Length: 219
Image: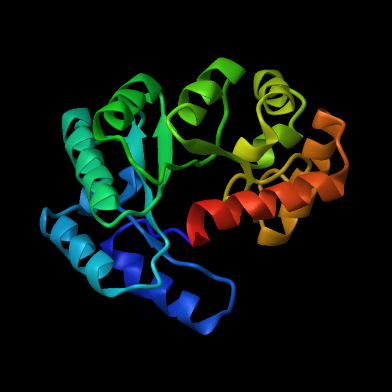
């Protein structure tokens, strides 16, 4: 369960503590940078040093559609990458309209644990750039939309071991449920769609997904 800013880190940690199988991650998401204070990076550092149940840094990243100076986004993103490297943790990344810049940052920092690019929506070529950097691709409701032809083609071609199913609940509803609240249970519909696109057994994909999750976050 990713955190998105200092205002919700305690809630994320509390939920993870209350529910078995919920693993916390903490980060500073670009959507919430209007509330950013430089002390939040120090606070994140302190949490990572003391909360041993944290499995990743995230969700954070770059977003050119956000009304916040992009140069500052770059610096805040880089600092979180460096914290992940310092604590030997994977990352959960958000990226919109800034893949070139994010890939350049990842090439500079060289994370030993890699991470996952949340909400992958792109070509096989873009996906392979992240995979070569040790990343997995978060595959969610976008592939349930027939109009997402490029992404649907990509997930049918890319290595299964590099795909990680997700829902982004309560956001990013699946096809047929636009305007409604997304739910974690809808991951089964994402799985069913991926099964059809790859023409592989559902059980094979489910097992590969669990292995990828354990490898990335629990190993």
